[in-house]
Amino acid sequence: MKLTLRVWRQKNADAEGAMSTYEVDGISPDMSFLEMLDTLNEELILKGEDPVAFDHDCREGICGACSLVINGDAHGPERTTTCQLHMRSFRDGDTIDIEPWRAAAFPVVKDLVVDRSAFDRIIQAGGYITAPTGAAPEAHATPVPKPDADFAFEHAECIGCGACVAACPNGAAMLFTSAKVNHLNVLPQGAPERETRVLDMVAQMDAEGFGGCTLAGECATACPKGIPLMSITNMNKEWLRATRKAGKR
Amino acid sequence: MARTVWDSTVGKKTVMAVSGLVMLLYLIAHMIGNLKIFFGTEEFNHYAHWLRTVGEPFMHYEWTLWLIRVVLVVAVVAHATAAYQLSRRDLRARPSRYVHKKPRASYATRTMRWGGVILGLFIVWHLLDLTTGTVHSGGFESGKPYQNVVDTFSTWYGNAVYIVAMLALGLHIRHGFWSAAQTLGAGSRSRDRALKAVANVLALLLTAGFIAVPVGVMTGVVS
Image (tube, rainbow over all chains, first blue to last red; front, side, top):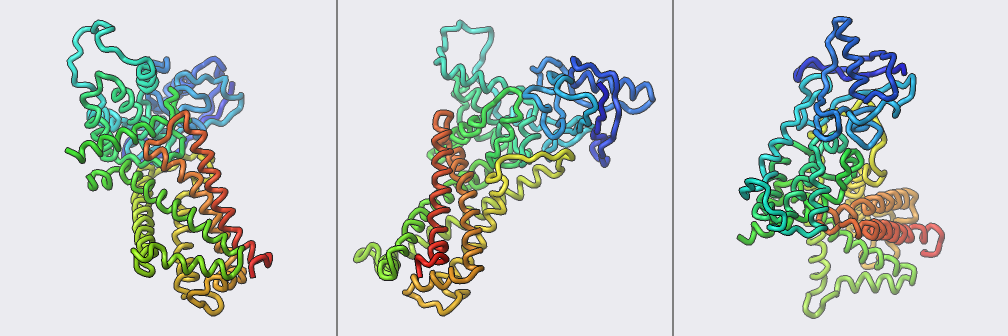
């Protein structure tokens, strides 16, 4: 395959960025999108140019490191992570636009790499449990109803890649935050912090400069792990419940 | 608690949801009341007079009406202020656009902000036209709403402004009602289709019900 790539190049956080055009040849349809970028970078290095910086780690769709807005879609045209996107999703001769996640809370570090530490601070605000867990407990010690376990697991699938923020017209982090809140709030292990968790995580989310939710639904469409839009509804419910309880105290 | 709610994006959305539902309830009543115009001058003018005597003798003349007006003003101001502040925040949160643009979300969702501005301006015109009579075409006579309505919809711009605003209202309700349910935590996977259907039906009924009046005047059914 022969492709034309238009890639966002930006030297550092303070520099002005712009789209640069590159031609790549000899791309196999079986390559992953990241392998295609590796091919481009090898050529750039041989030519003595600066390779394109992009985030990646596990390359098997479970770590949440890879990002990229490809032709206007977070993680590209398939509902998966960029590392699991293959070149067979494109056609020979295509022009592909590659941009970083765009949000005020995710500043560009270099080229396609953005700083997602705002997510870490949201987790630090309440995305944990305080119960001492120690070694794996006896499975029957804390029974969890099957629907709750399924609900928790569905939300635990979130890998924190930030595609929801990148896709949101308001740069909101509601889907990420709701996935984390719902995952722990439904389980007995997460019950002691049920109220403080949602209040603190939402407050941190706001403090990081993420936008508000207008229920456009772009986040859930972009999510490679299929976190549903209803996740946000449920977090709203948890937030209102916690606010009412805090008001009574 | 009020501080927590107003300072949070989630809380501000709650304010928008509640104030929006208050206005929606009012609009349903308003639309039904408007339809009385199809039953003649007497019935319509009598209905308008009754609105001022609701609750008597417990309430004094026009007290109920003013109570409703105060609630509505509070709802409109809260809704608009929250919308303005949230929109400012949303725009700041996404300062740079993507080079590769794609059409996003439904038309109703994308037009919430400008649709809201249009509705706000419409309310001002509507009150100056048919409540105070300040910008009314032809002689405005308080206590004779039937003739006033006919006057307004006898001008091309009266019809145009009204119909455009009611179409904007339909779109606004279509996304707004469903969103309010999500914001208040009332949505769920099993209820989603029903909520979307209710939103569509409400949007359609209100738009059709309101537009029926200018269409009635234009076609001569109301004169």
